[in-house]
Length: 252
Image (cartoon, rainbow, N blue to C red; front, side, top):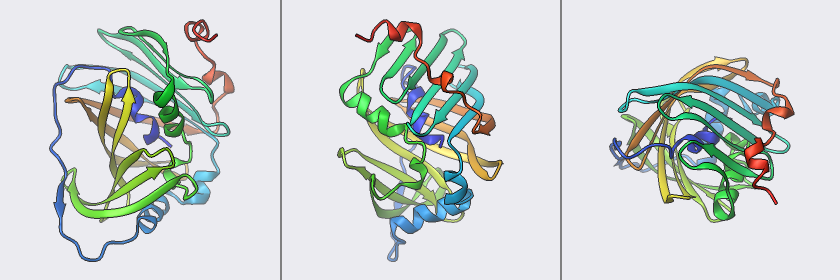
């Protein structure tokens, strides 16, 4: 319920650091993609536990290690309809907020001002807001196991994740634990087409579910690190997703 919003924070800073590419290994008998995903779902707590929740609130820190800057991060997500809001306060940059209220995808950033997303950006944001995306529902996703590789210095299964829109992402699942180790996503943005590589780790239990509490992103050479400190479920008010005044002013 957390990974899908990772790309919201991934385009803030100039290029600096590049992650080493994943290395492929030969493997003759690969498990099916559905088996891999179902193993991850079971490892984090099970489908029933995931479906039992309707919203999530997480707090933590967003940092850019190479620049020595960081700040508090707050995330709200909800289902029916899928919604998301991310807020961060970064030293030297200021207050940043991005979200999707079920209809409008938006951003308020000191560097770009208030903006509404449209076209492919809007559609991709809507898909990324899928609250139950972790389940990789066959109605929304076509999956295929591609290979067993070394990703984030550990053996992982690389799975192709395709949507009806034609977007193809790649998930990496730890071969030893079954937990998702990261993703590679390509998205259309105001900066053009960008690829975001995300690694997930330090899984901890909140309620009945395991949640990755360390998420490191690399995009256009920039490395960003999200560290979660607290995760609460089913206590998010609808008001958390209300559009900021500056965004409302852009809607005609």
